[in-house]
Length: 621
Image 1 (tube, rainbow, N blue to C red):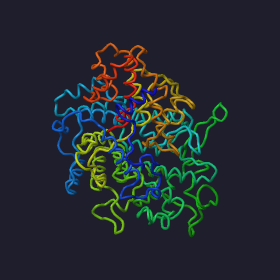
Image 2: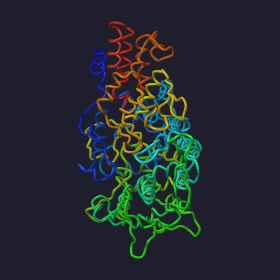
Image 3: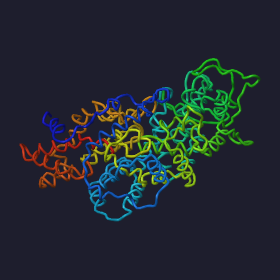
Image 4: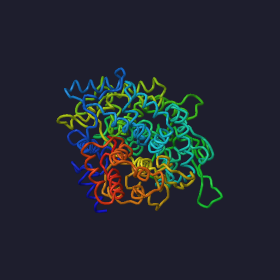
């Protein structure tokens, strides 16, 4: 092991660079109060910028700068605004990605997998001017795309078997997961997905996955209004990107949100109750099974426990007392973002879905959540901290407030195009990854100013998700595992796991390996791209990795099937398979020298081990 550690650090590259200790600090918390700005940037933005610098500094130049080309297409809305902003600021963008960089980046971003080595070589050799656009369409059609975006939406919708309040059980998670998968496979419009989840009614959360979104907002130990409030806060966060509704359901904004949200500071608790009133005719309750302490959920409207408008009659629970306001003892539903109310005889939740998905903020939030994933930082960041009074570039707020989005016209234009394209998630992804802005390199030629982060003058790198790291090792080594996952049977790919929590099973070594990469639990631990010593040690020593760098097998594994190759071919095969690129001349020389010393099989194992520990294996740049 000592020789391997020296090889990985001295001959090739360290796993993590540490140019700024902030990268290893805590990720931003849920609320803006934790996001104290430094030099106009949040800690998350500074961390992403520092990480980009670290990784870009060590990336090799595979293709000469003169041969880097953008995908052949007319200028998109994204490029019009992004490059226009850079031009107005007098800032030059980074060069375009090389083909090697691009195929790895976009394959990981869209499917959660690394590209196969033969697909890499074919793509690089292709001289078609539209090959990048064709590759994107190819990836969007793959079943792995469904895996990746089921995971992404599962994170957004907090689909887990238990949170701090309730249990869905693995069967409920699977049902919710299956709904998301089916919706993505059918290219269901995003506004219809939201409508399905907001209006879901049924008697068995194990068979009807849509019920499980509202189930996640059930709160124990208090009056039913606590449940209405939490369900409302969840919907506002997930579908509108407005986490401050959660604050308003406890108190007026004035005196609490004054420094955090101009819009929030002017809202009242009563107006938040009006939003929660849309849930006041809905009851989520448990239904016992034949197994002790195991149950599923029903979600029904107009039950005996929930049939009146939001009552103001509580003195206990998880939120401050709710008492009559003047003569008002109940609050009727009003969509307090625009004053809309249910139509005569309209089901309250159907009315909420109609108002919420018809709200321009619904499209704007979806676009921003997606942008934050692909670019590392949202146009509004954090993405769930929208301030509705700081979004209009034609009506900016009075000083000292400023416009909130880094590029408000882009955000609004892209949201409108999302609407015009029928809330098509694939359209939105295609628009983003086909843009030249997305295809900029993470390297920057010349001196880079961190103040340019808001201009997206270069691509921010991201640390791969835990599941992506697992699947990249499995795919490249060709040593396939089989995990028994509760309610889901046997699974091979971590990106198909229904949730992060205790998956595959509590106490499993692979579960601990995945957890070290901070995949979260979809409750009080968010997914994080931060680095840690535990991650480095696991990549260097964990049996999951070590069992996959053996030259003795199993038959068909990467190293076993490559040992009879000439050394130079062996080196390039390992590099292409693991890192999606050939070795540089420096790397080739070091690797060939290594293979000529001592035991050839052991040296080949050391080389493969080193590739799994190179900085560009665990980052998408």
